[in-house]
Image 1 (cartoon, rainbow, N blue to C red):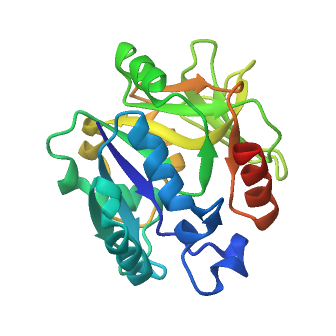
Image 2: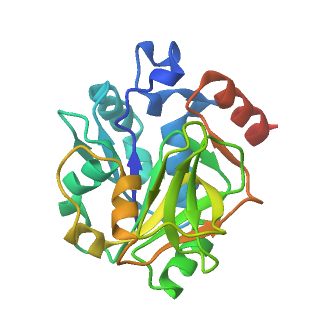
Length: 238
């Protein structure tokens, strides 16, 4: 199994921690977010990784070399111009020629989600993409029907909605966890342009199966801000 860690972001929400380093190298416990997630996912059977870089990319390269790449097969997809998640995945396409399915994981997410269970659910349902989601408070929600199929998106703050097809009633609101399995057929329509995967999924959801996987009972933290990074450390290591 192979994973892509999204690590190219500017990490502006983590400032001043990211004043002199990428968010992937933000301290976490006695290590970093990058090292923790590499080791966590490798314990679940993933040995091949692609990491996209942009902000302070050289520091990630040096860090990996100093740590002997943590004994893993790690490839770097460097972005001269930041491409966001959809564009970043498209740029890394050639690294996944031998893979049927790819785990996508935000480097600033900390969770105890069982990746194998998520993978089995994804494969069993023959989905283009399976998104780990939670019942949690946020301003932006993905909308699913009673069959857990993606049908839309809603911004609670502005009232804006986007739909895969026509608007429907009685949708289920979930917050996205930044963890997803995708089938390599995703590359058929993925373009090498700056774009997030969420609008891409909303477009693909009109003709492909994009599913929700509710992992609300797992631990999960978005470590994009200093206070949430501290909370994740306390919960993970206490």
